[in-house]
Image 1 (cartoon, rainbow, N blue to C red):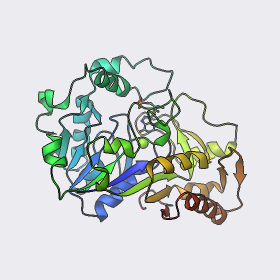
Image 2 (image 1 turned 135 degrees about the vertical axis):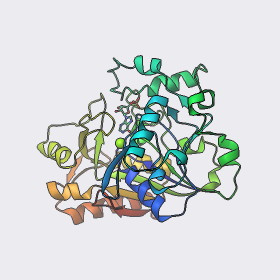
Image 3 (image 1 turned 30 degrees about the vertical axis):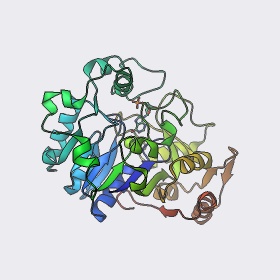
Image 4 (image 1 turned 120 degrees about the vertical axis):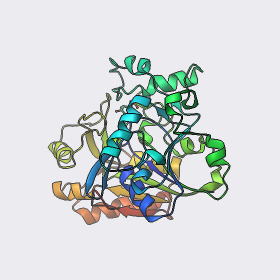
Length: 333
Ligand code: IMP
Ligand code: MG
């Protein structure tokens, strides 16, 4: 068994969907698998020149690869069926490709209802937290118990874990800073978004081959906590040029310069073999080359070359073997 994984090194919206889409097309995978989260996620992907947004459904279906919603995910059946419908209507034949792990948990209308007024954390109000609460409270409903889902449900152990020659591309939702354990609690999501979250699906550690950590060359965050330390008109400009609106809620994302501290921690915890740094094109257009160093100090670099060199040397000091890729295009890695 070989498992490659794409996961977020910041606060979600790093461009994981784009990287998964690229790898799924390039390498030969038997399955693409989502390993955490649910309809709170929003993956924006450019497929054959068209913008596609997925929430529950792993992006492997865009390339005709069977795609599994994994054991640590939660599924809202109504939103799931609407998403299948939307993809099918856009000409993406996916119904026969989507599988749901039998032991996924279900987001019920009550879960969503209980989140309607939530404002302390600034959640996506998709019932994510309440569904995970029910799971851990042992009062949850599982995918195999829902007859409407029966055409999609698979036994995750026999169909996936017990197949020795299988090759899987896993994709995470959200990012390190939103992880239930490593993020800035309570301003986090309710699932495990690090490499640990993937292992919790039952994959043996030795099956993990490539770990693609994805970041942007600046940071964005959506939620209730204070994120930017100061007013800086360039941050608003970056948000505007970078089209930083949530793919799930449409909320404007808060923007800050790239924090080396976030990167440091997420690299230490996830041990990526590759790091993709997205949206270099946006900083080019705004021509602003700030980073925030590990002491929290703003470093104003002179140009793109100095900026990339700074990030490169920072990452290589943590791990010289990591392959670093800067991307300056919404549809290419
Ligand atoms: P929840 O996951 O809906 O409970 O929201 C918890 C926090 O995670 C909030 O700050 C959300 O904005 C954030 N969040 C959840 N999913 C995503 C995502 O896919 N991208 C970015 N932020 C997210
Ligand atoms: Mg997103």
